[in-house]
Amino acid sequence: MNYKIALIKGDGIGPEVVGEAVKVMDAIGAKFGHTFEYVDVLMGGCAIDAVGKSYPEGTAEKCKECDAVLLGAVGGPKWGHSTDPDKRPETALLSIRKDLGLYANLRPAALRPALAESCPLKNDKNIDLMIVRELTGGIYFGKPAGTEVRDGKRTGWNTMIYNEDEIARIAHVAFQAAQKRRKKVCSVDKANVLDVSRVWREVVIEVSRQYPDVELSHLYVDNAAMQLVRDPSQFDVIVTGNLFGDILSDEASVITGSIGMLPSASLGSSRPGLFEPIHGSAPDIAGQGKANPLATILSIAMMLRHAFDMGTEAEAIESAVHKTLQAGFRTGDIMEAGKTLLSTREMGDKVIANL
Ligand code: NAD
Image (tube, rainbow, N blue to C red; front, side, top):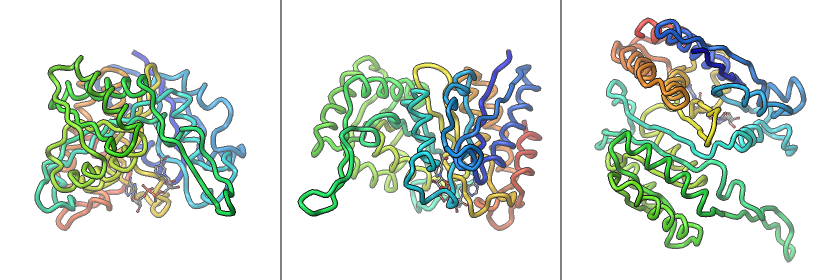
């Protein structure tokens, strides 16, 4: 089969890590008899420099002609200060999610045994969870929102809003993900304070009746933040809204040791899904061959599994990453005494050698 993949390399370390992921993708193609064709799509700070806008016209259309999208990272201090949305790289991220209808963000956070020493937690190191975050609704998109001077005081406001359809579709994603894992879903809300959360909880409970094999629990977001560092092994799948998911998924990533290791998938009801490492453009190490490409390589594994239904190929990548780490190879961010330090490119080559 031939698959077409949009590559949004972006800024900073984006092009470096995407380059390694493409090498791995081609190696998978050769091993399993698939061909992957790539289409470069300009987005982010590099697009501001080239055409004056972080999200040039036609970006979503180009992506929609492909079977999946791989994104490196966008943004950096060079473009950080503009108040014009067209000149802000982050605008492009929100726009592409919206335009591709990517309402579900799946972020696995698993501590690999070879990296146990990088985990900042003292006791519970048995971490293997997946956060399912609603991505196109909630307070980041709710209207009304704005700023004005009210009674002589600068005032700002946003609206956290979800309707039952938005809640039900993300709940289905979470229950289905749990069915392929340890069959537990924890729904996180703030139903003791927020009306929107009361609707959230009601709908999640209704959807859960269609998944009798999955155990459902609920936590308030403040407690969930605490439980994630106190006892992360209690979690299998966590489902939550946009704002809470943004914060909790970053917290979950830090307890697994390195931001350079974690992939993500953003899915909608049709193709293409978008696959990307959770980290940003790391301007502090860009262009130095220091970036860890494993999060992007593992994002390719998620693409194969979720977009192309290639479970065996995805496992081949995950196992090659595991072998590479077990053999003691590290990039700078996960380096420990007694291990072998590799550059971005060398790490990509090692993974391919272990495929
Ligand atoms: P960051 O993730 O880029 O970097 C945080 C720290 O982690 C830095 O010290 C960096 O060197 C390190 N790091 C990140 N990825 C790494 C990797 N693969 N290998 C080794 N070390 C790695 O976060 P930041 O510094 O807050 O943001 C930098 C820029 O990236 C900002 O402009 C931000 O808006 C943007 N950003 C983009 C995305 C995205 O494109 N999806 C996500 C987050 C941040």
